[in-house]
Image 1 (tube, rainbow, N blue to C red):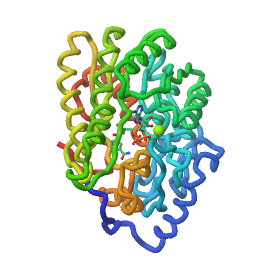
Image 2 (cartoon, rainbow, N blue to C red):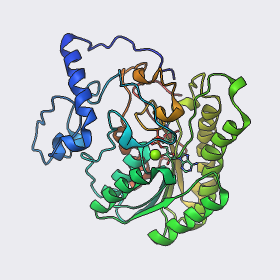
Image 3 (cartoon, protein in one colour):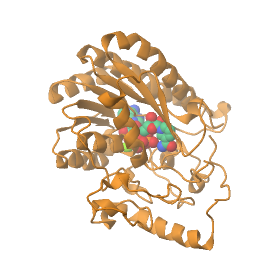
Length: 350
Ligand code: NAD
Ligand code: MG
């Protein structure tokens, strides 16, 4: 993947330029802008064709203009970054996702559940009827508390477990605490990651390399290993990989390797675990508007054009990932294991 340039948009007319400016403004105040769930996406002129009781995520829209398009405002944050401090604030589905009981009674642990893709999954899982434990770093407590409130507002149990996944002992205690407080475990979403862009291998220190490996690979291994003994048939694991596994950017040498390894982990582990009735799948997102990017994941000079080089010409929002995670976790996907689900604005993946 490369997000270095903006291809001309097929819809780049004066009319859509105006629309872009409107979208940017709408995106900025997303969380508080809309009162009606059916109108809550920052997708420009939304005219529901049916009753406003229709689930907001099912209203037909043009995906090209549904969310903000580049350019994004220049911005940086200290790692690990907060969703609340991004401009525009990402859409995690807070105002839009409506569940239909697809995960009723499930118990899920989501790493990196405070922000970005993990937050969108936490909201969707809770609204689909699951109790949810989230892990995050202590510096992300304010983002995490927003998620806890959203899970509880959905009428489900929320368990907040801060801590650094680079410690095997912490990963083991994280799983133990999640099992204890949720009363079991059915779904593990291994989603937390470290992405720090470094243009040259000559500047990639052993410390940075190790940091990425520990967060993205060791922690996944430790958590999954600790979780399996608690699983019953019907449980599942979902790994957040990336299109970087297949089409790596030149400045993500360590990160892209971990994403490729996560794909191999998923495909292999699915074969080990299916005799126990446990499914293992991955999601491979493209460029998604999350705190990972302005907090070191992306060259700050290139961030304004984030997502421009995808066929859709825009970045994805975390809310656009939720359906993939719900579908993969749902019993409706009982025949799907060892698969990688791409959500990336149109880049073809193997
Ligand atoms: P995000 O910053 O919202 O989430 C990443 C989370 O990782 C953080 O919230 C943090 O809680 C957690 N984390 C990082 N280091 C940790 C540590 N040492 N201990 C505990 N937690 C730690 O960003 P996101 O983009 O939603 O990332 C979620 C997943 O999506 C990651 O696996 C990332 O690789 C993947 N992904 C993101 C993109 C993108 O463009 N944003 C694209 C492809 C894949
Ligand atoms: Mg975060």
